[in-house]
Length: 327
Figure 1 (tube, rainbow, N blue to C red):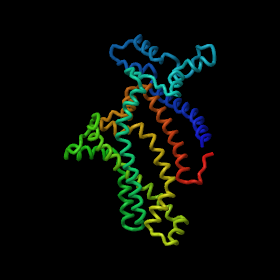
Figure 2: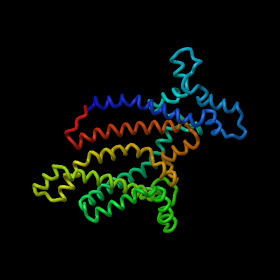
Figure 3: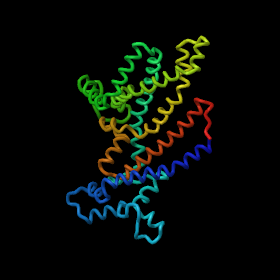
């Protein structure tokens, strides 16, 4: 297993470089370094000298990808904006923000708490509820419970998340005054601000989750080992909740474990609507401000977490199915 993990980590290096190159091309394909400097400095009373000084001080005075003025090939490739802004990411040196010069690493650590405070309860509650409801519907397959369960699930997944957010803010926050509409506080007072985003996140994900898990359970129920278990006289409850659930864990783990790394990245939509100072709102603010230093750092961190999630998924397969070997 160790050699497998080492090999996957080595494979990740060119993937991370490629992701950063695509991010770099997309970002500067929309706005040049000069336009980025002009937005950050402000168009009013900003001279060409101010822009050039800002570009030189922040490392954006170099060519984008190839420096033809350097005498050596190494110099042509390294004395560029892409190399100077990307190389340090490989050892997790995120540098400072282009806009306010604050440490990006410090901001990530500080904002990870609010993001996790919303994402973890939302994720755990949603996964448990989706599996439990899907098992219940599969248990009553072919009945009115199954039919109406599928209809409600399809209707729920067809409704936009914005409807849940705006509707819940109006009813629970404004009409009934049960929870704050938006905002955030530190310590124990943060809980009351997270209840509404967590509830909305769980409700919004139930439809697709129930449909996905129900399909998996129905596929397992029709396999030969389930017929053998029934032929041995096992109850339908034991067949479904013990044998079918255990063998359905690989596809469920694939979706669940792959989602865990993204819990650290925050929920872009939810944090933005509820004014939660997490990593999701940090990324949105950086995109709006054209802060390339933060954008490249968040994309790189997301790519690393995605690769970690893939490795954890492969390892989890060996835990639920002894026949799986990592070679």
